[in-house]
Image 1 (cartoon, rainbow, N blue to C red):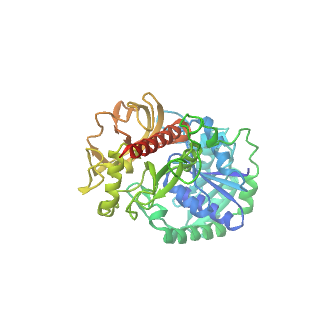
Image 2: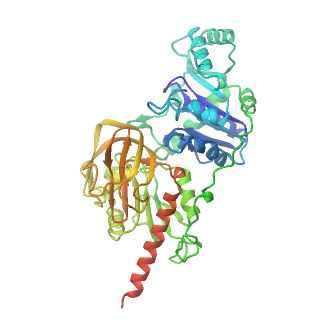
Image 3: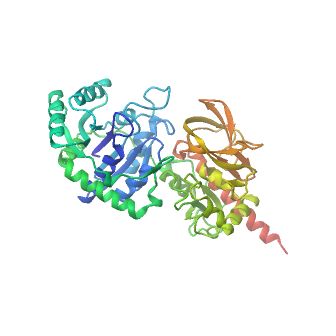
Length: 474
C-alpha cells in the first residue's frame, strides 16, 4: 500500500490544507485514496471523506493502543491505490507526559511510512534548513522524505527557501502560496464541520485540490509513497470481535430488516448537530448483529421505526440549541424511550442533548442536570474505568478516551456515575440510569469491541421485553 504521512513542526502550519488537497488531487487522477487522521479529531476526517469519497478514519495510539494502529490502517486502506495520513499537532507531539505515545511520529513508525513535512515558511528563509534538519535528525526511525513549503510570499522567497533546503539535502516536493480564498472557517472547537457547510466545503476542497496540483509534484509524492515497505499485520475486522447475538444466547438469528425477530435497530444520531463518530462504531454494531439506522435530531420528529437502541455521539448541540429544543416531538420520543428502559449511549454532545436544558433551552430531560457554554476548554486524553454496570460497559471495564468541550454540566455526575477517571486526575463523571449511559468521554470502540456487543445485546433484550409485554396484555 503506497502511503504518506503529512506532518508539520507545529499546529497551524497547514497540515489539513495540504493533506486534504493531496487526497482530492490524487482522487481526481482516478486513484482510490484512503484518508486517515492521527489522533482523536473528528472534524478533519469529514473533509478527508469529502475529498476522497471514502470514510475518514482515525489512527489513535493512545485510545486504541499502538498495536491496533497498523491493523486499523490496513482495514481502512483495503483495496485502495494510495493512503494519506494527516498528522496531529507537531510531528513529535503526543499524549502529555507519555513520550512519543499518540504522536504523528509514532504513527509514522508503526506504519513504516515516509513523512512529508509541511512548513509554514511565511517568516523565514535560510533558517528553514535548520528547522527541517532538526526534525529530520531528532528520531532516526522517522523517515522524512521531503518538504512542502506553505505560505510562501514571492518568487524570490521561494528561491531562497529552495537554496537553503538544497544545501541541507532535503527535497522540496511542493510550494504553496498564501491563498485566503481556500481558508476553512473555525470556531470554538476547531474547523466548522462539513455537515454544516456542505456546499461551501465542496468548493473549498476543490480549491485545495487545484492549489496542490499547481504547487506540488504529485508524481514525486507518489514515488515517495511507493517506497513504504509492506506491513506485516492482518487488517482489523469488526467480525474478529466476540460473537454477536446468535452466539450470545439470545435465541435469535441476526436476520435483516430490523424486525423484532431479526436484527435490533440501533438508531445513531447524525446531521449537522451530531457529526462526531468513528466509522468503526457502526461497523462493530453491525457485526454484533444490529441494524444501524441514522436519524437527524434537527429534522426528524420521530425515532426510526423499531428503534431498540440509541447512540448519540459528539457534535455541536450548543450551536443548534434553539433548533434542537424546538423539535419537541423528537425530544419527547427520546425521553419516552429512555424512561421505558431503552439502551442509550451518549457521548459529549449526546450528554448535553439528554440534559434538562442547554444554555437555558429545554432539551430531552432524561438527566436531572443542566448544561451551559463555558469559557474554559476541557481537552485531553483520559484513562477511565466504568463505575456502574450499564448497557455500554460492565463495571470495571477499562477504556482510554478523550475529552474536548467548552461546556459544563451541573451536576457533573449522577448517583451512579459512568466513569471514574484514573489519569491525569481522579474524579467521577457522567450518568448511568436505567438503560442510559451518558458521559463527556469520547471512546473508540475498536479498543474494546465488547462494548458494541454488549450494547447490541441490550437492544435485543429490550426489544424482546417490549414484545413479551405487549403479548401479555389482554
